[in-house]
Length: 67
Image (cartoon, rainbow, N blue to C red; front, side):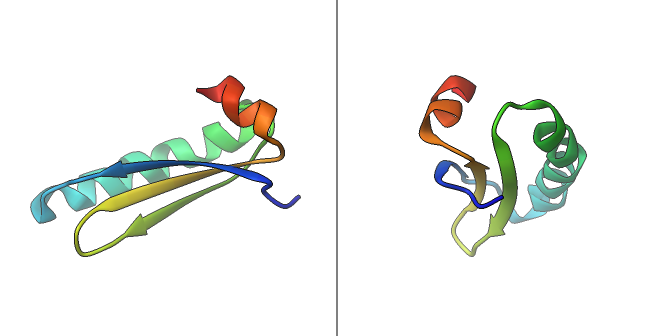
């Protein structure tokens, strides 16, 4: 299924802590996709200035409900 709505979380994480942040993402990705109504994707974007997690949902109502 294709994501129709996204929630984005942006975090400013020191370089030395980015591996730990990636582990948290990895540990919780599958449970998020398996247990949250309407969840269709979860992606980690590691950029030079920050780290972003994009949560994809099948519709805006389910994205709002997750908040």
